[in-house]
Image 1 (tube, rainbow, N blue to C red):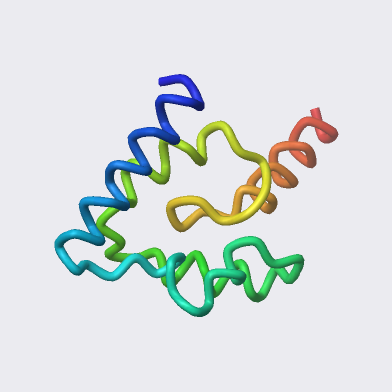
Image 2 (cartoon, rainbow, N blue to C red; image 1 turned 60 degrees about the vertical axis):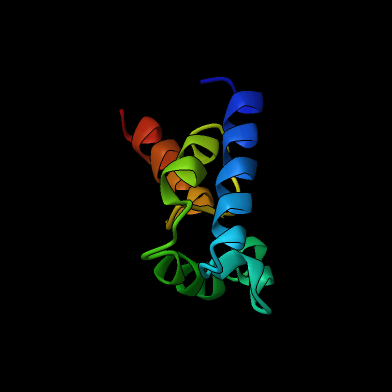
Length: 89
């Protein structure tokens, strides 16, 4: 799935969740946790993703990202781990 297709699917999933009155954690008052410079904030955001109705679609977007929290995964930490592993090779 291309990044554009993934973003479109996420937009649809978020609209459906809103129409059903479902809670989407990153859309709340603490939404800045997902884009914080603080690793602790991003860890909390990742935990809050549990049970999100748009988790699958969010993960599809996250596959193309190297920053912020997507689908309960701190993409910045994951990218740093991949870079460290490559340096060890």
